[in-house]
Length: 135
Length: 130
Figure 1 (spheres, rainbow over the protein chains, first blue to last red):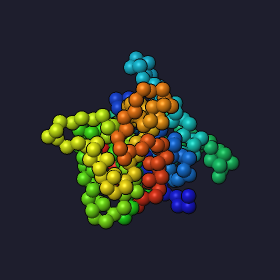
Figure 2 (figure 1 turned 120 degrees about the vertical axis):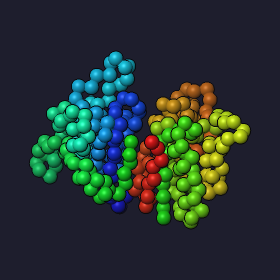
Figure 3 (figure 1 turned 90 degrees about the horizontal axis):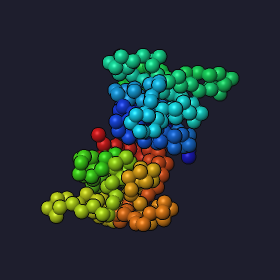
Figure 4 (figure 1 turned 180 degrees about the vertical axis):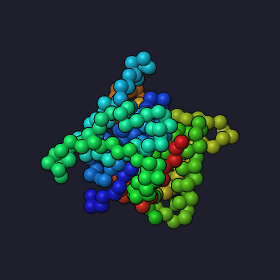
């Protein structure tokens, strides 16, 4: 495949009320094999998908949040979280899973994958993407 | 223009499949190419031939099948989403030890890679969902 496109997966919904978050993650993992330029965006209730300490025992559903930690191994290391969405929900970066990747261009140094951006910056990221899949 | 369509909701409960159908039909009539229509999430429920809506309402499943036959459309149901929701073709039914299949004519079951490929190959990937 010759042409590389910029894929942006937009995640807007809470992790367990509906299946969108889980099935979005499944697309991201499959899509990683296609060697495209991939980024993930989390906004609105979608920011809850990345929170630490998720416990689904009482609702009898699978806690799939550990899978986000594997994204770095799939070369998915551009994860944008909208600041306004965090603020509105009383969350900060410290409430989110520490997602990292090893930068092959920097002697495999471990770096943070999550970048908190403003709504205006998020709009710019969307503007610059070729394919946007919204979940 | 080469266009692909993703449908994320099932029939009747949500308008997504209706709107996607009208969009796809209009795009074809406008001389555009539809590279693929991909059904994901509850959207896979658009592909069961066992749906029996009232006679005086539109038949969403048959409408897709007919459009596919007319324009040689590629209607793809995501395999992982289909397995969760009980949509099977003869191969899937056999593989998973089920006693029946229910896929509608003109649809096929395949992987999520087909969605990514649609994004890569098409000028536009248009999503219909909530």
